[in-house]
Every structure is written in C-alpha cells, then in structure tokens.
Amino acid sequence: MLSKVVLAYSGGLDTSVAIKWLKEKYKVEIIAFCADIGQGEDLDRIKEKALMTGASKVYVEDLREEFVKDYIFPMLRANAVYEGFYLLGTSIARPLIAKKQIEIAEKEKAEAVAHGATGKGNDQVRFELTYYAFKPEIKVIAPWREWPFKSRSDLIEYARKHKIYVTATREKPYSVDRNLFHISYEGGVLEDPWEEPPQDMYTMITPPEKTPDKPVYIDISYKNGDPVGINNKRMFPAKLLAKLNSLAGQHGIGRVDLVENRYVGIKSRGVYETPGGTVLHKSHMAIESLVLDREIMHIRDSLITRYSELVYYGYWFSPERVALQKFIDYIQKGVTGTVRIKLYKGNCYIIGRKSPNSLYQPELATFEGEEVYNQKDAEGFIKLNALRLKLRKLKS
Image 1 (tube, rainbow, N blue to C red):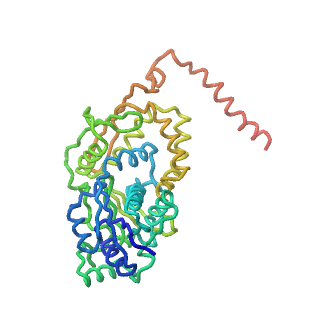
Image 2: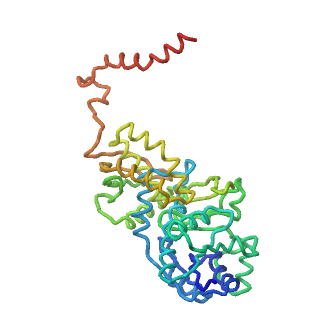
Image 3: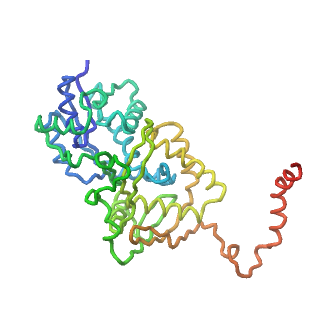
C-alpha cells in the first residue's frame, strides 16, 4: 500500500497535471522535487504552484555547481556527441535529478517515485535506470504509461478543467527542456522535419543574421581536461559555463536541428541550443590535439560513440560508463593550456592553442630547412609498411 510518492517536478504541463492525477488515482501524499540545474525559472513560484496543485511538500535544491562539475565536465572530457550533432544536454541532466530524487524518497520514507516522461521517449529510461541503480526495490510510477490522456492537447484540456496554470498552449504545444548546458524543443510544429522552426521559439541564441558585425576573441584556460578560466580569470564551473552561454549566444553559436534515433526505436526531430557547450566541445578538442599522444587519442576517439550512447540511453551510473570515464580521465592528466577562439556570425573558430605539455615541435613540423629529422628515413618506413600490400599483389 502506497502512502507517499516523490515526483520529479518541473512546473511544466506534464508534471503539473501529474500531481493532480496521482492524488486522484493513488490517493497518496505527493512530495514534489524541483532541481535547480540552471533552467532560469522562478523556483519560488514553481514551489508555490506545486503546493497549490496538491503537493504536501516541495523540495527545491540548487544543483548547478554539481551538475556542471560532476556531470557536464566529465562528459566534455570525453568529447561526447550523439549521432554527430547532439551534445546531450537533456540526457546528462536526468541521472543527477533521479539520484537526488531517490535521496529524498529515502529521507521521506516514500515507497514510490514518479516522473513526467512520456512512454515514447528516452527520459523514462534515463530516470528509471538511475532509480533502480540506487534503490532496486523502489516502485516507479510513470503517469504517461497509465493515464487516459493520449496527447499534450488532452493534458492542456485537463489542466484548464482543473484550473491548473500551464504555459503550454494549443498554438505552442512543443515540449521545452532547459538547463545550464542547453535548451531543447520537441513536438508541435517541429514534428514535421521539413518545417522550419518558428524564429520566436529560440531562447539562448541570437539568430546569426542579428548578431554583432564585429567578432569577439576569448581565451579559455584548461587544467587536466577541464576549463578553469576565461581570459585569464579563474571561474567556478557553473559561472564559467553561464558566461560562455552569454558570449556564444550573442554571436549565434550552438544551434542544432536534427532527426535523431531515440533509444526506444523511434526517430524524433529535436532542435537544440547549446552555446557555451559548443565552444567548450571545440576548444577541448583543440587543446587535446596539442598534447595527446596519437595512439592514445585514436583509442579514445574509437570509444566516443559508445560513451555517447551510454549517456543518451541513460546508463550514466552503469559500470561500463564508469570504467570508460576512468580511462578518459587518466589520459586527461596533462591536458592543460589555453585555447584562443573567435566567435562570429554563428561560427566558433579555433585560432590558437598553447600548452606547457605540448607535443608539437616546430623544428619537426617545419617545411623550412632543419637538421633534426632525416627525410631519407621515410623511405624505409614506407617500404616496410608497403610490404604486405606488395605481397598481396604478387599473390593475386
């Protein structure tokens, strides 16, 4: 018999309806948990709304620093990107929220947890894999897999009927998810992959045609694979990312529109804005190019697709992701230096990089005269590597 349920609550359409519906269906006490991961909303208002909608208690926790330091930065150290474009902004937030949700469930002695993810999407998997990783016996309630509503329009009608205030409308029914790393848009007009997204939809990024006509130059400092400062000014992780979001967003950087493959097997169109994350992704690869050994880099690169899938699918706390992270973090020791970047009209240009651990040797790379490298040695190197090709042709 259930008596308490902890709901991951955002204040949006799905979770606002979920409070009312869960109380009606299960006759239980609802404890709402709202994680502050940099979504930029009035969390006091969201807390008040949860209480007015029927929650008996609301937890609001500031997780911004932990989110960037312990989740985003490790992922950036791995150069993770899903299907060539998506920097995993929503994917990386769910494990942190779910972990904290389980901690609250244990504190409150709640028998169940709930979330507002749909039965068609990835988030249900990400939430629930984390729940079970930390509390195997927990009961999970996923309203979208139980309630009679078939669409977001049905939810909007239910909210209107029960006087639940929501910002979603029939004219703008797309789903929005925002945190300190990115903002995503799905559904509504975006379900037609041929339809251009409405220009008034964008939040973090200025359209390139409206960006400044003068570029901005910035230096990003790295230590052991993590960004630690901008323009020689040290910053804590969350502040650094917020600053880059502002700078890159002003110059139209970080917009992605793609059709991706969800874990459940459905293709979905997503539109993303990841301004600061795009800059950090590119700058990290630039500093790595200077200091990482070739074979180490190539081995790591061969694992990026698998690592990215683990994050996208929700296996952040799986033993395989943890093991991969240990390898990645080991090779990041010494990935230290500075990257110079030019931001202009939607583009992030790498224009310089330097490091005290640089493996780049100008006297070897130069096309001018030098005595360090005997070019004659290349002849034997080529012939030895061509031997198997010669033998194969001779036998044909």
